[in-house]
Length: 303
Image: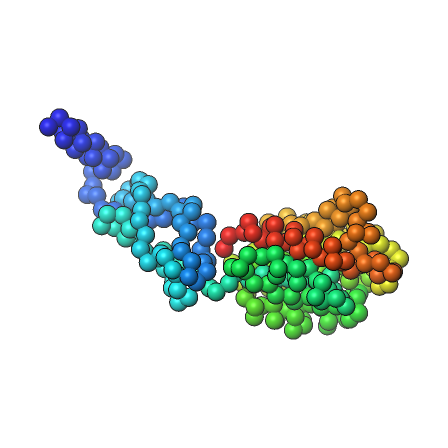
């Protein structure tokens, strides 16, 4: 009898603390979001990070509860929610379900692979990712942020004005690995004035069209000068790279600083950059290194 009495005293204390003077009505609420909101069809809902509470609708006091789930296994492609339950309370928790997570690789010939597309870093990345991921290559030879430099050399030929950009949007990526700026260095006399603003235009366009997308800013790697394409290493180092780093900080993006990482590698030029006066594009080892680094970062992202 004493145990029953103590139980009821404890229960009443929990129900009234901070809520005296009004009738109690409660609702089930999410007080911490789950780590994942988008899931792969056929897989189970992962509630890691999810915290569910009972909230008093009068005073907003919350108490964390241990929840259960329904409709949370073998998710279907048309499913938009799972059901969270606690005793007689329930809550519909919105999710998205898709066939694959998608990584769009956006850039110039360093992304496309120049004359060796089968040895591009996106090609190797597609081999490295888990079976839940799909990789799209949206690089193009000679393209730039501003349209100046490279092989296009006109402000009407900037990346955002080309089909590569619209195709990358249509791919509906969850992650964008972005590496543009190397070709702008060859036309820096014209590109400098608009490089920062045009980079922001591209980033804002992606974020507006794909609000949940995660962008990985890839700081352009060094070149060896002279090279077959007239791309000045010092311009990339002194002007392009700092802007890329500043933008990553401004937008709070993940960063892969290929300049720093290459230069920290002994004999990086002969190891990662193609010989015979190319001195710009990646060797197989270079592409594999970049692909590995993109996957290192992409595998940690949640969406």
